Amino acid sequence: MEIRDFLIRVKVGTNLSIKKQYQIYQEIRKSPELSIAEWIGTTKLIKESQKDELTATLQSEQLTHEIQINEQSGGILTILDEMYPKLLREIYCPPTVLFYNGNLSLLSHQRTIAIVGRQDDDELWGTSH
Image (tube, rainbow, N blue to C red):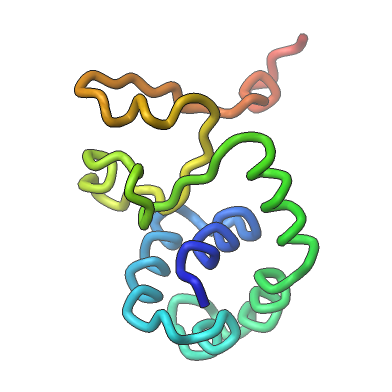
C-alpha cells in the first residue's frame, strides 16, 4: 500500500479528527508493506466494531472517484510530499493532508501567507446569501 494514497483515503473517506489522522500516519509509516485491510485489522487505533465498515469505505470505488474529483478541483498535498510546508510539519499534530488551489511553488519563498477555510463557511455560520 502506498502511504500517501492511504492518508488521502482516510482524509476524504472518513470523519476522523486531525489528531486521529496523525496517529494513523505515525503508525502506518512503520508498516508500509501492509494493505489497507491488514493495517485496519491489526491496529488498536480503530474500534473493532468499526473495522469492517472502514475497510469497505477506504477500498471503495466511490471513494476513488471522490478523490479524483478533489484532484481535478485543485491539488492534494500530504505530509510525505516534499512541498509540504516545513514549518507546518513541525507543529503539534500537523494535518496529514492539505487541499490547495493556486501556485504551490510560492511555499518555497521566505515570506508566505495562507488562507485557510472552506468555500461554504457562510453555510457553516448560518449566514444567508
